[in-house]
Image 1: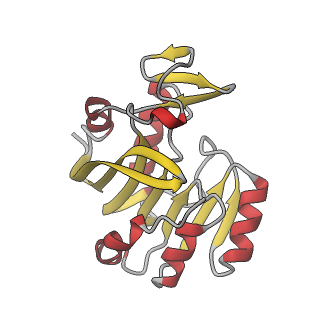
Image 2: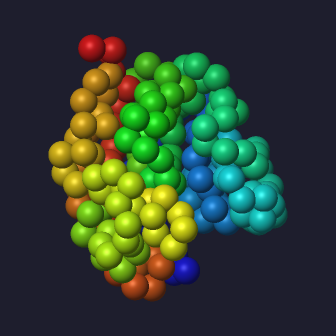
Length: 194
């Protein structure tokens, strides 16, 4: 895996949003983004489903509070406690109704006006399963035995249609995993419930 400094350009907005409140990181992996956040002075509460990844993050970023848990379990921060939430390529394992519910739960975890930064698999992500796999539902496939969702512009916008102010939604590519990966990068602010 290569270094992927995607968060750097968003740090000023995160600082304005979070203030002294903690940042919740969903799916921290081995802690690359956790380290970026901690180095920028944020109090980070992170979690990952993988015990090995959570342990690696604890070693890499001792100042972070790191949990090993499923994203479907209650978050380690309660309603309105997070200044910001980060989820880089970690929200794509679920049926559409579960995905919508997950984004609603993230919104509820944010303080009013808090920021949510996420990256989502694109339907153009051919190297990582967006084509040639059995469909479970539209743009949701069984990829090497693992359910995996891919997002187009419409479905990405639909995730943030209620209760959010969409600040940025860009289609991008990265070489985080050596081969080119296509994704959507989204920044949204918690707004009033519509």
